[in-house]
View 1 (tube, protein in one colour):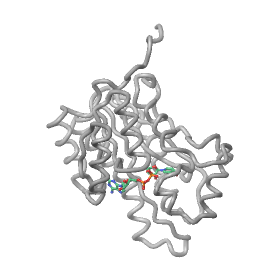
View 2 (cartoon, protein in one colour):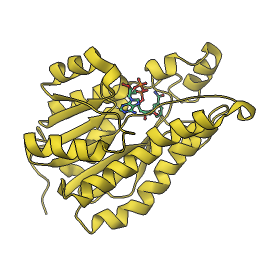
View 3 (cartoon, helix red, strand yellow):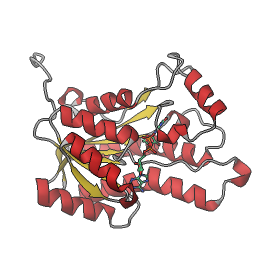
View 4 (cartoon, protein in one colour):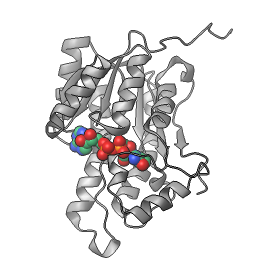
Length: 251
Ligand code: NAI
């Protein structure tokens, strides 16, 4: 086969959902998807409020207040996307949280909330959308893992476990989803400059930056462009992969 002349607007006509899209990496993914021609549903918790509408306006997308951990999250998303767009082609499970504590203080609440948002919710929503046939043939599922799920990180037993779990989930779901013509891949970002990492103590933050051979924090767009590849026809034959986005991390 010959190469296509160009990938200009490779997501034209596609419906894409990005969770946790009010700010940070999610907001940039929405921007990149819109640039590439997709109709974007930006989802975030109700408390995200104005920030979510601002992202939606910026990308000409549609906002959906959705807590990914709600038991009916898949139903709600399925109904919303079907009514407005007739289904979903691409979903990025980007919503994520940290609740860091050293092991001795890692209480059950911190453990459960991180596992629920970062690992259980993406699984439940993917399963729900596939079972309902809302995620179309040719569909793409893209999960957001982390270097913390590969290399581990002090104080992040819960977060690292959730992000390592995402990798296990991608590996397990890839052959199953392939039967339906759907691919699933993940990115594992290193230290990216967002509100999430701005909350960590300065010393740890500096150490995070120095772990990249670029010797600085990554940008949200670095992650978004890698995800755009997984969403585009350029990656038709790519399934069950995890790509590190961490400036040739020294880890
Ligand atoms: P952020 O904290 O700036 O944004 C996360 C968004 O997710 C927020 O808008 C938040 O409201 C939303 N969210 C949280 N819980 C939610 C829920 N239950 N339902 C729906 N939305 C929810 O974080 P950032 O840095 O943009 O991270 C995005 C993703 O990238 C996360 O999964 C994070 O774990 C991952 N990541 C980030 C890295 C970094 O260095 N910033 C490194 C590796 C992975």
